[in-house]
Length: 231
Image (cartoon, rainbow, N blue to C red):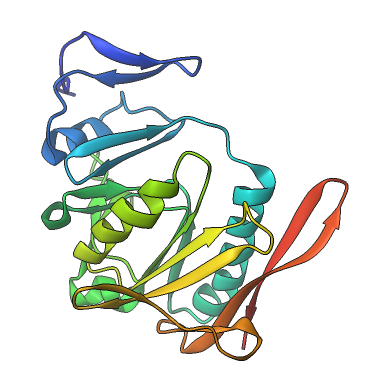
């Protein structure tokens, strides 16, 4: 495979993640993503003309637990009803018009969205049947769980980029506080608007057509257990 760029490279320590020189636009970034040289560790996004690299370990309670709770419940609501697929991490969404290539914490892609052409599955370089490495276009729902290093990125830069990419719904979770904040952001022409909290703290999801809330239901042995409530 053709090299994305010659050395020198930028090396992030202690992880040893290497960023090639010469990645100045989304096309070059995607070429690197599709190459064998792209790192398997860390989260590396392209957002509005800049590369954002986060190699910090994931916080179990404020990131991993709420993310898993949301993905598990969405799996029941989306996958078991055969509406689409729920991805956790490493599912890359790219939209050239939005100058975006990112791997959300959780991503929902409906079969109808692929059939309509609003999302296209990008095949691996080998072109093996049924092997895909990227979603080009849009998604139906993305979820981001805020970490200490990602607040501005999740709340502003990704919010704007996901809107430009046509993502119909964006859930933003911040479990660093008690209680956790859980924003259901619905796409409108000029930006995302938060769904208001109703009775019991439920917020109406346009995708699910039901109210949702995130609850901390149990704490034991230093671990937090979250649940996505739906009604």
